[in-house]
Length: 432
Image 1 (tube, rainbow, N blue to C red):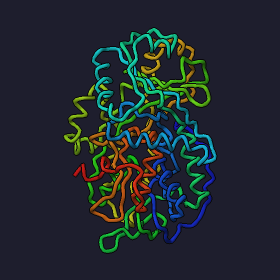
Image 2 (tube, one colour):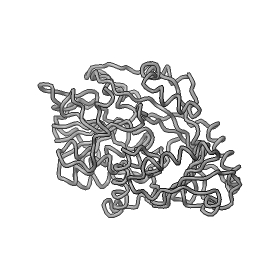
Image 3 (cartoon, rainbow, N blue to C red):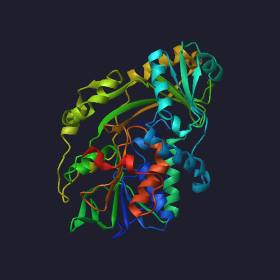
């Protein structure tokens, strides 16, 4: 069962006949872009096929980190740190942002070598990240009995609450004039002389000057219908939340085979950090060669299986016309079942390392689908083949943390403002 987000009263309203920008997708990236545009008095309509934040935007772990990101991705994370800190004033609401730090810990010298290599790769960025000894880990996260060689700690890393953030952003965007319409799938683009002139939805057409596609997992299928190959593959992360309990630290901790972080209600969000489900689909066969470096490096992390997801995916159209029901109407919300075996692994591993979690009582479990690109960085940029179309998707499991700056950057690009950071690392063309 998916987490319950903070309710948002989105009034029923007719489909506008025209606007300046249409955003496809009511996840946190699309909503942040909408808020940024609305703050600039640019008319914007967000179209969500299901409900806002119904998929990965409310199902992620809530980590806001710079640690272990690619060096070229860190400017976006740093900009997001600044924007997260401004959220209470900007939104008039607390979204649970707490700069409590994130710590990655290792059992072996090989794991520590990876942390050391990352730290060396970002030395020029003057982060506050540093290596920890086993004794320092014990001091910061007491009560453990794990045999840790060392760790990597960034005190300025943070967390926020996925069930609060998108809702607060949506409310603020609407208060500034943005229009949000749920249960309204976009079937196709409308073009004039090769340029975007509108979108065709299940409820009719909206004329517009720019379209931002922020459809997460669904962006590949939408672009495929336009004849554009956007390489992303799905992975499924299973998560659990405990009831309120005494814990060892407010620092978020990532070990090789578990992670935990404090939840706003006093419980903990926990996952098997060393395993993700890779339910095979046709796309795995079509794109597999592009992911060989990732597969070789992370094969032990992926639990590959062939099951009903393969046939469900085959049953969804890859090409359709604007007057036909689209796949987005057939699956309003991507809601994978949690892998309880992986959740049990996470809890068993965590209890062995910190016995205080033996008292944990599980309140809820869920899973979310992550759209992963071949280089694990997103696309945030225009599609040259279709002027007026910009993509912000493929966040590879770390979009929530950078969402304030990622949505801001997308808004900059569609509105012609100076980009908040250099968008070059996120250009679409790197996959052509």
